[in-house]
Amino acid sequence: MMLSVVIPLLNERDSLEELVAKILDVNRLQRNQDPIEILLIDDGSSDGSWDVIESLAGRHPEVMGLRFRRNFGKAAALSAGFANTHGELLVTMDADLQDDPNEIPRLLGKLDEGFDVVSGWKQTRYDPWHKRWPSLVFNAILRSFTKLELHDFNCGLKAYRRRVVEEIDLFGEMHRFIPVLAAARGFRVAELPVQHHARMHGASKYGWSRIPKGFMDLLTVVFLTRFRYRPQHLLGGLGGAACALGAVLLILLSAAWVWTRLLQYEHPVHLHERALFYFAILLLLVGLQLLGVGLLAELVVANSTMRRPPYSVAGTTSRLGDSRPEESRLSDTEKHRNHHSTRGSADETSN
Image (cartoon, one colour):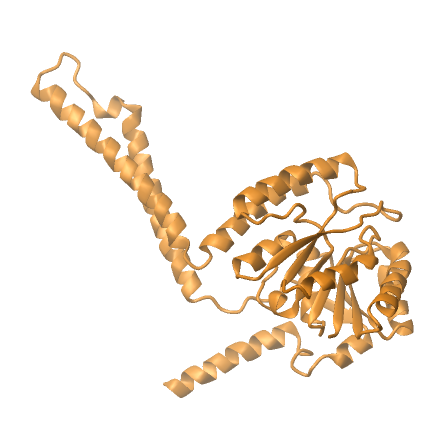
């Protein structure tokens, strides 16, 4: 089987030569020179990384390059890499040499045991504390929410079968949740301890800002994996509970109002003086809104169409463009236009 190695990068020119050489050596020595392709995705680098990629592609027939017009993020880069490679087996890794290419045969061996996704686990991690500690907390929370027993969801070193990446849509910063999305679709996911190295070149592209973003993405993933095709079960459930609680409070307040007047209490209940009365009305309004939003979400799911790819390609190396089938060489806009024109023709025929 052909192996496709997908490597997204941003300003990593100093490590690319050594990284490609190590991958080719591993393939030559440990995998008996099985077919391999290495796709380097330049995610808007400004340090001359694209020049190095073009040079590597010119010297090594296994290397291809793809360049974004600007920085679109790692999820978009991986999505482009999956769409522009041909291997039945895929390995993703970072370009900073912290992921060890010698682990590739071990990951593929784990796939041979019947798994669809194998995620690396950096047991001994050579990163600063402000990256390790938040990651430990985040991984623990993600395990509890998703029930997927992985120790390191964010490890860039992973192996997949082609059918997995063909069924998963990546957007935003969903790249760290690929095992979760795959498991939600019934694919078998495994974890393998891998060697991790200290960064030798460049600087990390992640800071404190990724922590709140990660938790927001976690909520998105939980929603997508559990309620993507039945949003009313969540929104309608919350809305129905809010309406029920609001109705119960109003009934109790109304009963108290009637009771204190029938018995001619000295200080009868006045609804407009009770904060609980306004809270009950708020619950009813919020509940009705959630029910309405849930119905709209169901309509969106029922009538959803093909989403445009979340990236814009500035250029490719010649070998990448030549090796792609005619249909895949169409631009994203042309594909989108052809998709809708085909649907329109089908509708006219049926009419």
